[in-house]
Image (cartoon, rainbow, N blue to C red; front, side):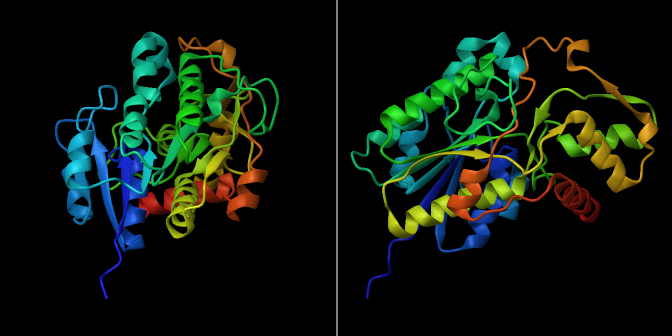
Length: 320
């Protein structure tokens, strides 16, 4: 009896923070052919060494260069997870055309449509910054009114995908936090950054009036794997939009207080300030906390509490 075709999963932007965590989970899931794209000249060597079965391809999300080579040697992927983005709001504000060209995955979607079938599921990472931020616990059906270019580029991406793709899952993610990756990423990670600042014992300022629902990276990975496995097993038409956040609505101040509580730092060094006291060169929504009822009901995934995630993050850092 002929061996059943192995399913192929492609992670676009696989050398980034979330991408590396997804690749590690896919590699240990087994029975999948896994590949990723990277934009830099060469893929990170520590990642290739840690996950030798995974293939790397250089691709340019803006121009589409490199996707044909993936089709030729890897084949049409059954699942594509798109993590690639310019995700720093200020960078998007400074160069709106670059933000739109990178964050709206037109070349990726056109490449998938070019296979002429509905055999691929696109799992696309969006953001809580699509919401205006004037109330608490946004639901998926609430209006999207982003206040900055990053949010606007992500709304444009969502609309493009819904219009063009037969099968998609759009995940509106909050701040993703957790342990460092196999090949450390350059960007500062929120819990590690707060820990580093507070460990010095000097007074540090944190905003008390901006709220998000930070989500532990392994919970985001679980959501993606759950959607991918369902698609690979039944192939039923999938058109899903989900808020992906943690269960707790917290300010930066509360985040810092959680880190201090877990570490045993003196809380008196944490100074509460208003977000309006700092000019960040970009508008920031005050409250984009999200209702995750749909996520927990549809996938039976219960994200870890913020304090539980902080503990898990710092424990993982200590043992690495």
